[in-house]
Length: 179
Image 1 (cartoon, rainbow, N blue to C red):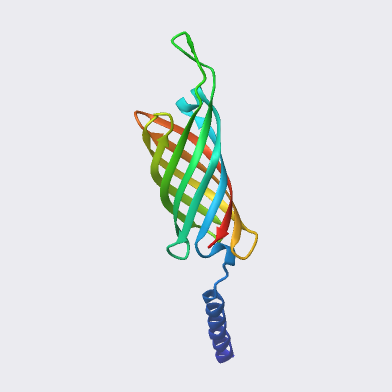
Image 2: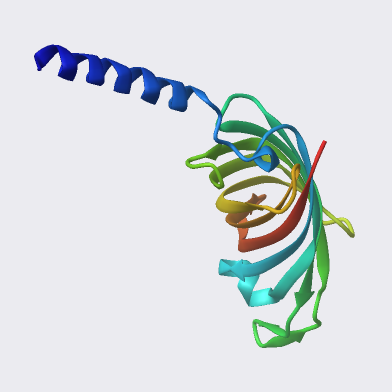
């Protein structure tokens, strides 16, 4: 009886090892990808006082480094609508402005479709607004829709530091194309 139990246990270990060694990942979650997405920015702090909702688009290149770790490089365009602003009793005109964030970072997949991300880079302001240091931690989820394609939904905090910090909560809806 002991020998039968021992043989069953050993066979179970080999069977489990064989199953674990096989890749269970969806093909849409593997390989390099190009992601095209719509961006929405909900201003926070001082930015909230002078701006309404921001909107724009972004392009992200995603390349695998290890099983659950991927490199990202992104560029985008976000336009903020100005709102009425009073400073020291004076009514100031609405000021719309746009920024072009360019960042690089990492995505770590906690499970097959759910990831945490962090990016660093620069935010280039249009109309002479200068350049700021950009950083953005966030989370997201990918939903496979074809062999090498997926829908990517993410949310992040993004800050731009230059003589103070402008920040917002970013929401991104994108389509990832496998390369």
